[in-house]
Image (cartoon, rainbow, N blue to C red; front, side, top):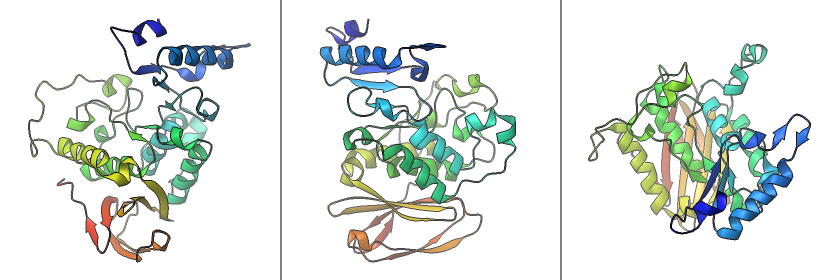
Length: 297
């Protein structure tokens, strides 16, 4: 079956494997290593450019060394992290009553360390292929949480540009699709029949279109490097850069306004001083001067 759909007339681009973390595992029978090798080799015999995605929620670097998967659904190195930083429940923590009772508010330093734990094990080409998503069929859509306004959604969307990898948008997020958070069925509503036709019809559509345009057209987000330049308290700033194109993504989960100074000496640029509003995100172009990039939200 895997080979069939890779051949003409279908010629699909690759495969996503559901529940890949338990694939070929059952009790004492642990055949994952052998079976994944056979599966991935067979796929690439048909199409050496085929893209292989495994659904995995934890550390799976043994599959990400360049000879098996291209990427997991990157919950571990991105989605679970950014959701927790934005103050949302953590799926696996919430399933454990004792852990769920422990008060914890993720700091910017925690974000950096959690992200590094994933990416430091990956070859560069695999790191750039990470499927970065914060919503999916298995977790509530962030915009359906009460008191999670458009400004916080904007923070999450900006974060897609701040992490190394491929931004992935769960269907319907781009139009603010309806739903609820207390059951899986609330994450999987049908797309609305009437969709936005132009800029200004829907603020979610405008926001995601803005992000996608930047990702497709700006070299800093397509080919660029990434460097954490500030991580104190609950404020994280990440630089994305390529040649003369430099952007700063700044996320603040502080409860009060903050004045921060960011050293960009490592990029050959003067330091930047910013006044940051509480629970806000900014994308800033930095060259001879700083320019706040407006999403018109």
